[in-house]
Length: 574
Image 1: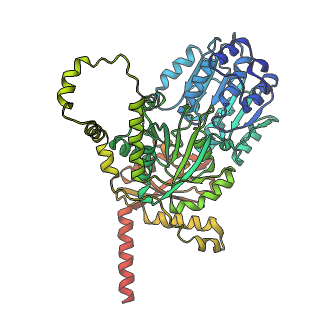
Image 2: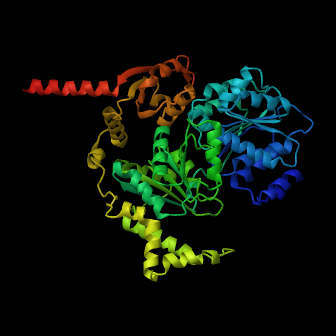
């Protein structure tokens, strides 16, 4: 494989690359950079997150841009503000020795500051579709002269319901531009977009199964649904130097788990859609600087996070989408470091493991949740080893001799050690003393019946999901709502959550259970926001389809109806 020097980049870029410590291009860079340097043709590049896509399009675009052209020459669209900021940071580092300005444009921050930055000097705009479209409609962003259009994580932008915004943006760009589409997958709606807006695109692909990275250990453990949080604690306690991301399904679950961890004394925080941009920057700054050991996040909130040296990715549940599992897991085991991707499964999720193995080509190894005794012993051993290996440096205890002698003079060595360990580990010992075994050996309920189901595994799984959803979340403050899109529209739970968040940016609406049906979906949400939800969706669209939300009543009313129905049936039987 050629080095960056042999690819043909200009000296200013090579100096930046060298300063960043890059020597050999990644596979997607080795294929994409020479193509973009030498060709004006459109490009579809298939690669996963974490494979170096920003440099794959950023370096050749910077190489080809004109320094005396003061117009916006390139627009890069991406799904989230975190990814937007990360791409901007990377491009600025590449352009250190060039006179180009890169401006990030994203929601959740004052639009006036972004307008001012573009007006002052801007050759490259990196933005999320919603905010970019807004600025175009306001007449504050002119893309009529751009030479390069990049769609980064294009599949994710479509999943998040940005098709209308992307269509509007693309229609504002000139025909002569070079369009570069980078994606992990190629769903049908993206194929249609490529056919509409790209001209005879060439396709470059590197293995989508970067999950097969030998530096990542893929594991899962099985416990009762009520024990998931305690299993998480044991995984964290077993690894005192853990530095990882815990992925949850919903923003409410993210907040709940982070709050529990912090209350239990863990160095953790949450990243979710309810945080302001300043709050998100603060949390991410602490995590990148390792002032936090554990970051609890949703898939949407964690898009674009580029953090090195993660030891663990923990799936609080298996994600609904196999691509999300790949994206999550690929955040550890980078740059030659070892990493662990571990899923905490309830018994009912076991049936999904073979499917994930087939789709990823990767064996998921079952591991046991450590016992309380094992965790406690591991923590004490780590503490003792660290003390033994500590080298005193510039620490003068002479002026403390009096207080040391006075307090320790009557203690034997064993008594002193016992007191030190008690002081350090009394709470941990109390928590794990007589703790139960969290490992589940139970087989999934109805496993044999599912194998005989004439509708196959998929039908049984969907049926089981509907049954669980009918029971409700148990939260009487939640109402039930219907929305007129479902699986026939390729809707998934995380997409629905993203749509709701995007339509109701001024409100913090807790989301409960979600049941995706064929032509509609049922979900639970904070009943106090019923009017806000319904009003927010009056003119909303998803993939060009007008969508609306209707209230189906509260959980409390639903339980009352079911109870009355049960009483009626008992009376009839009598």
